[in-house]
Each structure stands twice: as structure tokens, then as C-alpha cells.
Amino acid sequence: MLLDISAESLWVEHQSDMANSRSMQVREAVASRIHDLGLKINSVPVNIIVLKIASDQLPDESEIPVGQMYGETEFPMIQVSPTGRELIEQSHGTDTRYNISYPVQVSFVAQDDGDFFVNDDQYHVVRESIMDAFVSQTLPSVPEIWYTTLAPETIIDTSAFLNRNSFVSAIAFYFHERRESNPVVPDPIPIGGE
Image (cartoon, rainbow, N blue to C red; front, side, top):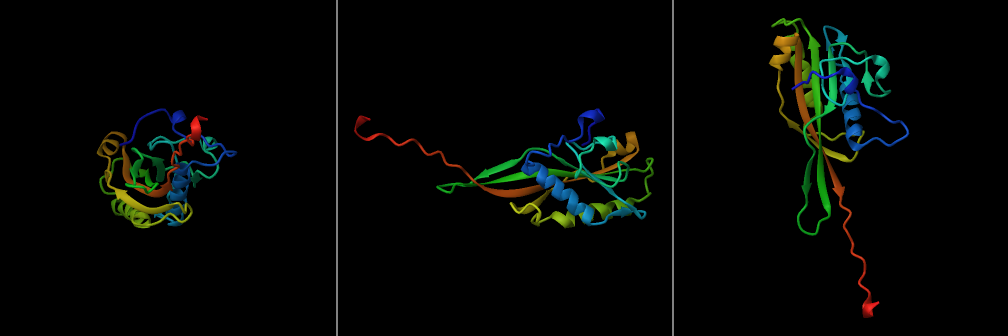
């Protein structure tokens, strides 16, 4: 589920003078909503960060763009990143609308030194709270998103737990938007051979 790749390539580049992509708008809205849940482990707030890809490596705080992190760059942490492929469903007939679904992975990462019991229930409370906040919901800060569905992911990444002493749990959501197609209108055919 998580990849061991260099930390330098992980962090989302953000250009403040350009409009954010719908994908980035959705990920930032997801991070904001999770932040509003006020999730804690042993009275410690869970940190939240928006990334290009989920990882159990941490960035240098100075590299993280404004608006893409809530809290500190330390565990426990929730990482919000794209995952998989967008889904596109074209309407049939003369309807020019289509649905596009943006996949977002929410990964909860904690370091618990491979302990098989510590914080187990609290970790699952965090997971369930996140699911409840999004399943069958709209995304009010991105009004184009009209519905959200859950795509089940690994509850606990056993490889991360056994090999790196990390608790990693992921949830994937699809955020659905309905768009209007831009139909191709052919050039008019000249009358009389002109």
C-alpha cells in the first residue's frame, strides 16, 4: 500500500498564482474536514497533511506549502493523497453530461514500535470517524462534488507494521462531480458551393 521512495519526490508542488485543480481542491477540502473532526490519540491531536502519494516518511516542514498541513510533521498523522484512477461515466443518448469521480486515499500513520495492543481501539475510532464524515456526503467547500462513495482499502498494512513498526490504515473515497460536455459543433457547410 505505501511505497518506500525518497522524501524529496513526495510533496505536492503548489503554485499560488494558478487556480487549483479539482483534485487538489478535493484533497484540501478533505484535509480541512478531517481537521474539523478534532481527532486525537491519547489527547494528542492527529496531524494532517496533503501529499502527492502516501508514505511513512516525513517531509521537512519548510518544504510544505501553506494550506496543505494541519499541525506538525510528526506521527500520528493523516495523509490525504490521490490514489488509483479517476472514473468517468458518460451519459447515453443526447445528454451532454458526464460524471467524473476523483479518488482520494486517506491514510492514518502512527509509530507504535510494533506493539500489538497499544492504541488499537483509538486507531479504529479515528478510522471510523473519517468514514462517517464522508460516506454518502457532499463536500460543501467544493460545491461541484455532489456525492461521495467508499472504496474499501487495507485496514492495517501488515508489511508496514511488521517491517517498519508503523501502524498504517487506509481508506479510499471517490468524490463525484457531474460535468457538462463541450459538444463539437461542425463548421457550417456553405450553400451553393461557396
